[in-house]
Image (cartoon, rainbow, N blue to C red; front, side, top):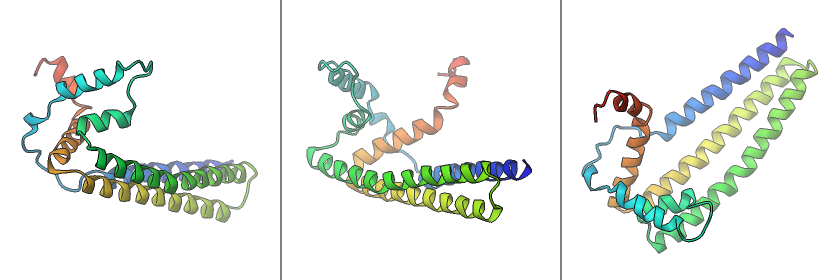
Length: 178
């Protein structure tokens, strides 16, 4: 029973550290200033999104449609974006499947009282696969940012900044500080 708890704790620690590592590596490495943030019109983007949602589709716009509308992606950029999205999916899906299968093997091994060395090897394999997924994501992000023009990059940085500020915004709102 102690082995199972130890291995489960080790697995949780590994998964938690991988999530932290992914968040750290996918976050901007510097604290970029977002010049001209006032030029980003969220209201205009929302109007476009609502207009797109009113085209008779009951589910509304997809996340891709929202991003395309907000960033004002041109048709030539959209073609490349679709290609790099497909490339990311082609790279990530087999890795995610392998992670799932290896995790199931680890669970079966732990439940059967298998050898700690075997469990450790599976945990290391899961970690390596997770790093490959993170690398595929980072490659996608690099290509995506390179695809954007300066104005679109500015809007993307505004979204990143908004995402970072989102957890603290309710406190400021409750205090009526804006």
